[in-house]
Amino acid sequence: MEQHPHNLHKERSFVIIKPDGVQRGLIGEIIHRIERTGLKMVALKMVVPTEDQCWVHYNKDETWFKEKGERTIGDRTKAGLPIEKEAVEYGKDIVRALVKFMTAGPVIAMIFEGNKAVGIVKKIVGGTEPLSSDVGTIRGDLTIDSYDLSVADNRAVRNLIHCSDKPEEANREIKIWFEEKEIIQYRLINEAMLYDVDLNQIGE
Image (cartoon, rainbow, N blue to C red; front, side, top):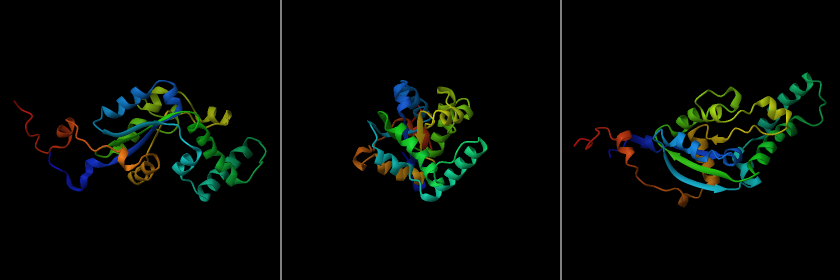
């Protein structure tokens, strides 16, 4: 198989099927939707995340906490609700809710590899909020949560799946969840159809 310059078809995306996806029996459906694009799964395991692992994964800083917290304070002020803590703490509450959700039960951690893997997976997964995510996406088709309901219930949005936003982020996330020895290098038959420039040897 002829190699493309810079190994473009070796880009990796990190994916987690969250506790709600596992509990609703959607593991096979979600993997199928990603696999059928031609992306290659190179790692998979079921784990129960730790709190520390999740805080490192979400990787937010004080600036992010303050910005999100100030937005929360603005929303609470408009709604006539009391302001009970500093903006940074309201920002941290967002990640606290995510960590509580992610550590509630087992998740499926995966790595997919292929040309533009991060962008392809993001397209299939859809927007963060299931309500506004496009029809045809995992989040748009397979669940019905919304920001309004999650805020009313004081919890994270249950949106089935996490995926990397960009290749650099995927590389960072993969190191949190996998050791290098857990990532399998192998060849799939369909890679010839996807990446062989001349389509050699597919005739009789």
